[in-house]
Length: 158
Image (cartoon, rainbow, N blue to C red):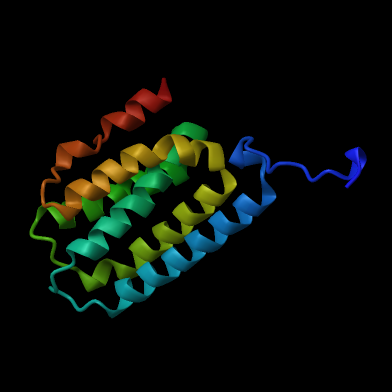
């Protein structure tokens, strides 16, 4: 091999600039959302749903954090936050599923997934908080004060 034809070492740069990393992340998220959606609609009313609620808290928590960072005070941010509080409420109260909430939660999951794809940098910043909250649901330690209440809207307005 001549000097000009040497193979280049793989780039160790920022994965946020790598189109292959973007495609893999999008595909992984789509698969995860699809799996959660199937479980969401197949879970019977009143069933124990700790795992499902943990996944939902993570996805909608990501959406709530991203929308709070990128769209403070917007209807999207308020919707994501409201659904996150509702899902957390289910987790705090015995992790029992309420099938009547499936459609509205699914809409928030899809919205959160779109936010993740649209704002990847904000998603990276939010991931630690979403991981923490999902883990608290998984181990049965979640509390309503783990997520801000309506005061978040007053702060966002200023």
